[in-house]
Length: 343
Image (cartoon, rainbow, N blue to C red; front, side, top):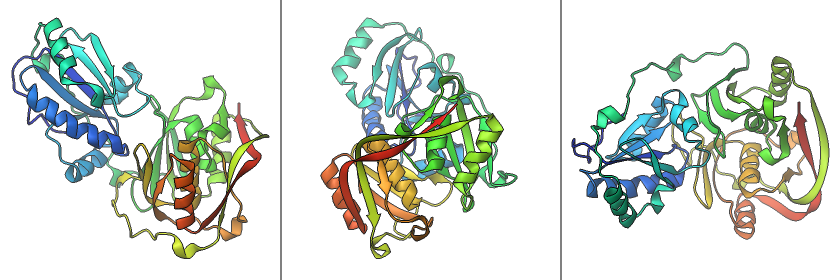
């Protein structure tokens, strides 16, 4: 996507791979920090920010969030899979021999550690002998078409904590993740309420018409993959939510990231979402807060229109306060909730 504007062309002792995504708000802060690190260690260190998202989405994001770091796309998700990246932000520091000498959140990598690693790893290697770049073509978002309401393809991908949900255009949404994550998205529930037998829980990309009936898509996917399903009930703490007023919801003009773009941005405390339905945002909150959420309104009273959201999810009292601000009545209590089992 772009070459480093900070690193010198000298041979390098260390290479830091910064794994990130456009939906990951903490990744923005990490990028700002790594710009400072790269400028300080311009001769000794090369920082490469690596994303596995669609190039059009990454390019659009970089126009809003400038960086002077080298930015590239992970070819066929090879590095995300090789280094078993399951949470973002994440970083892997390599010496000139390609050996991992540190890994973790890049924001935790301090100057004193880098100085120590430089003393311990004196060997240097040319940048482009170490990094292998490939040019490849991807299907442009404008040209994506599906027959019917959905398309599901198995892909090479190492699922993250959350699925990658992208609004491709006004008609289509892409969901990339494990089968469990995709089924949870379609069922408008958290992953903790969906069980998929491990051999079946492969990685997929789902492209879905935004007007499609999600329950019908679940039935179609079961038939496509030869799945059987059952539903059981479990009792634990749940959050009952009732929408009492549509008037307090944000319309879809409050946040406008355009298309193509990620549908939500998540930091350590808050969700910011562009064009997500009521059920979709509640499912995301359920996933992040790790609590089942039951929408108590009858189905005919809850529309599927897109809205914009900015919701705290980490602490219960702030979460409930935010939901009240959007016109929801909430009740935290012990109750039963469904578990969906696929085999």
